[in-house]
Length: 559
Image (cartoon, rainbow, N blue to C red):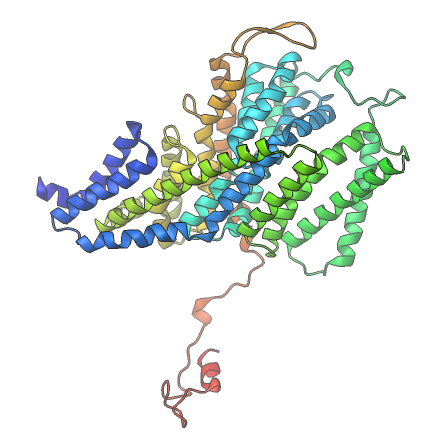
């Protein structure tokens, strides 16, 4: 028995962790208890030194002093303040009126608002519950297919896991030892590409099954002009003028060789500021040049967009770190809530309580994973995992395919935080040794981990939607008609097409790494093979005429 433990300590330890998790024990305590138990067994068998646990306090203090993790409470607080200040309601109403006249327009509005909430709230539960309470009754009222309506709401809520400033991207960057800013840049294209795939699916449904995604009737449109029009031309003119001003501003302010990130951020900020100023002047001076929908879209959508690009833009162009960007976002969210006169002590208390709970959850799991990894590495578990994964056929691609399948399967039982703290520390070092870009690996895992919120029957997004979807037949307050309840089976079946889309996105990121690795396109490439170390110009350190190595000696070392 003792020989068996000594030979297979690492796989037995990992298997015990899986058993504890399947039994339902809390993840943080399962990791810590497993690490301490097998550490004591290893010491008793002489495999480990008692001095091993002397490194444990240093690891815990290292977790607590990690400044990168400060971005977690900042972005969480920002999202909660914005969500509780009524931003979701305003966005859904406005975008719904804008796209509602089109077939599938309400579903497209849900996807677009889900992407905007993802870039501000970063919390799946807040996005799904908000859209479920506001959009689902409207979609049911006008005859949307229940599977499409529930599926699009649940899937759009999970966009907050891949679109910056996602909390899971912060955790993945920390676990992989990479920059959070680079992780955000790498996630930008896959996140919005996934949003585009959702919209394409809705459009396909509207084209081939028009009864499943009808347009809202004319009498349901609230922004109507005195002449009977809906004011869309006015909105298009405003946007065209703003784009022209943004183009001229970029030409005047920026150099020709400016980086792409800075160009995009500056263009969007000028465009938003120009539209907002014109709408404000029209309202203050009572010019009457803009329609109701044009004013509504400008005043509702521009402030959160400005906040998004203030936070992410400063990170992308290198003006602020993610922690500093999160702090600015939190202050900006407070200012927006105050401007809407929705900031009060109760709102602050709720946001701070939830932020503290989530941050403690992250820190406790991180401490537990540190205890587990300390013992796991002590029993050569990292070498066991490395040998297991590097022996797979197919090289890098074989490794990534197996890791993707493993993550997808584990997502049936574990959420994204648990996957990030358990799987990533094991596969990250192996991927690094195989020459795989760790930002690419992180984004691949992040897209894959989204499925953990959509898997029937344990997907959290499905649970959140089930909690707010009507469980019984009810009478609609607008039409007076009886609306049938939404069943759990309809919610589960509605998630299947979007899980398939997420898997397609995993394959796309796997096959086209350039979607992610563009984050380093503007950086100078250094070939270490071309670097020469020449020490022939001096005989050694401290051996010059004056007993010191001169500056010229140091300068001659590299050429």
